[in-house]
Length: 217
Image (cartoon, rainbow, N blue to C red; front, side, top):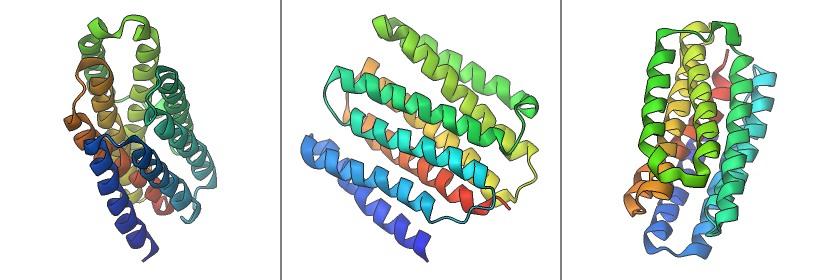
């Protein structure tokens, strides 16, 4: 029941975020986006915790992502850099959380090569536009790629119930894809379509990861 109410509230807030993005109304956008991002942190606190160590790493990662969301809603270039670092740290914490479910030594799989190839193609696509941001973006792509690989390993190689494993995989991949739209907005072409597609994927991904906490039995 509570998760249903959270999904309803999150959906309403997401429509608000997309509306203010469309109108380019920055102040209400910052407020609405911050509340929506705070919601996934609060939601995590109310989930059952059958694997406490997974929850603790994930929660810290969610807090870093909350910081990243606030920074990316600000216009300053310095804020974008702070947001990038915050999301980078968030992904590192997600990697730690997945490693508590499946040892990193078991992450090797054919799917790993597919994700690595996709990430390499994304980097080659972005590279001509990165300039001074080349190294930070490369590092970010490497970390988020490893995060996606970890989620894939949890899905295929852990013995937790399928609902939890599916939430982790789909959540991580949704986050991964949403970052492609963030990169396109920042480095390729600024247009509303990036927000319209990327933001729902991002929040769907985050809430799926949050809800996975209670399904790892």
